[in-house]
Image 1 (cartoon, rainbow, N blue to C red):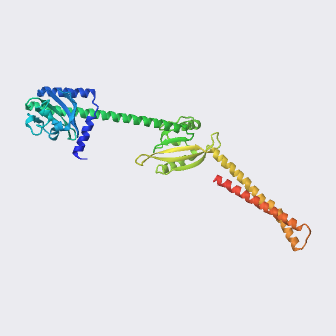
Image 2 (cartoon, rainbow, N blue to C red):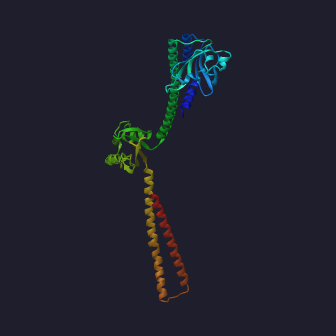
Image 3 (cartoon, one colour):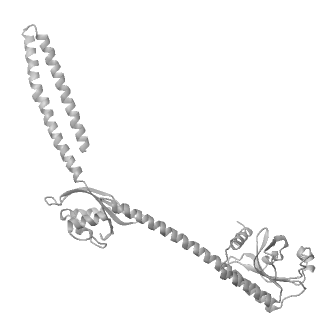
Length: 379
């Protein structure tokens, strides 16, 4: 983007600026003061874009804008010092301008450039008269000082509006954040699992409702931020937990199952996970403890094991006890065949025994498949 494009962006910023009533009054006061100091009937604060000259404040005219080609300020924005033209009709830059050659027949112009903080000339504070004249040094300096005050006021107004927009965005962001936190807290607290966050000193940072209820039930006390988390673990696993926390704080997830408080009314199986928590920089700042009750699952696994043992015993009975008599019959029939003992029902008897042996084999195979499927469920 070249300098002129930057300048036009700045003009657009101030042209579209919704002036605060107080700032508007200050700008009106400045043009009145400029007109008085310079003894001029007309004083204007202008902004120049690529097509028009816009009037932000004015005295002595009801015009709000003009085409840029008619603007006297085209040359003002190109120089640092105040531009003074005693006789516009005698200056080749302006002597063909309709504002000079016809009504209102402007003759005198003096303008001080409006400089942004980036040094871009976006317009002017100018005075005009309908007679040939000039400004003394005091008037010239005053016009320059007042032009700086104009840009300061407009910059201030723009900064205040930008600050207000930023504040609104921050408020909106905070509102969204608060709503998200409420939703997250609702989910967090609605979980039946125990969730506790601890820092590197193993001090409690945050916890959910289930954690509060669990600690109160087991320890008859209320969990609070700053508590030393190891105080809430079963004495039998404290030493192990110290090691597991050390591992978690180097970035590894830990998952273990324990039978806790065996032989007490609070006996239960719990699955405990230690999950490393990182910040945006990837630094581990804490560990989340997720603890869920798996007692029912463990009981079901135990029942399956008992059932599997029963099925195994049945399979042994089927395999040995049931097949033994059949095997004996098959042996006797082989002996009879070897002795060439024959009777009318021998073939029918042999067929029946073989059929019985096949059915027992199928039953045994089905039992083995059932046992294997149960073992797979447990695994």
